[in-house]
Every structure is written in structure tokens, then in C-alpha cells.
Amino acid sequence: MKRDIFNINKNMIPYRFDIILAGEVFEIGVKYNNYADLFTMSLTKNKELICAGEPVIYGVPLFKDIYVSGKYPTLKIVPFDESNENKEVTWDNFGETVRLVIDNGADDIG
Image (cartoon, rainbow, N blue to C red):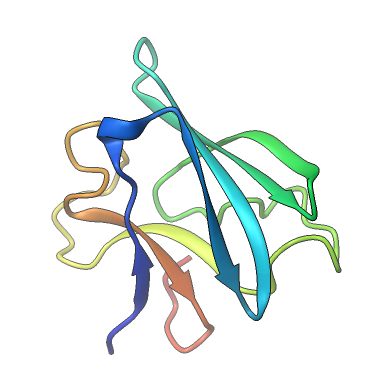
């Protein structure tokens, strides 16, 4: 099954972009910690910062631990490698084989 994905432009980090998820507009901020080889994301809705510094961990839905109904996207965003080559998120594979997949519930990815 084809999944919806969105790419991160590592050459632009740190940066922010708008995305429409389930009909709502969110702003996602992307940062990278070189020392820890760790990407983090922030989430803003209607100019209100909802979450900052969320680590991007393979197979773990973003913003899962701090979900608040009505503020967060109703769809899950999961770092996932459809080729099954990688099981972690690193600078080298993020945006290459490991991508942010929008899980609409049709498949078990996160």
C-alpha cells in the first residue's frame, strides 16, 4: 500500500514548514543535534507552540506521549523505512530511506 510521506530537507535545518494534516494547518520545526545524532521536531498550531524538542525515534509516532485531543493532528506521523533496511533514524538515512510517514490507520507502522 502506498503511504503518504513528507520529506525533510537536511540542507535547510534548522527550519520550519506548514503542513495540512486531516484538514488542519500545523507548523513543524526541524532541528538536529550533531553530538547526539538526533533530530527533533516542534509543533505549532494557530501560532501556539504545542510541543518543542520532540525526538524523532524510529517507529515511534511523533507527539505520542503528550497528545492532547483538539490540539494535535489526528493522524500519526511515524519515522519509517519502507525498504526495511534501517531500524533507527540517523543523519545518513533520514530523508533517504527513513522518512516521515503519515499513518492513516490502514497499516501498522507505529
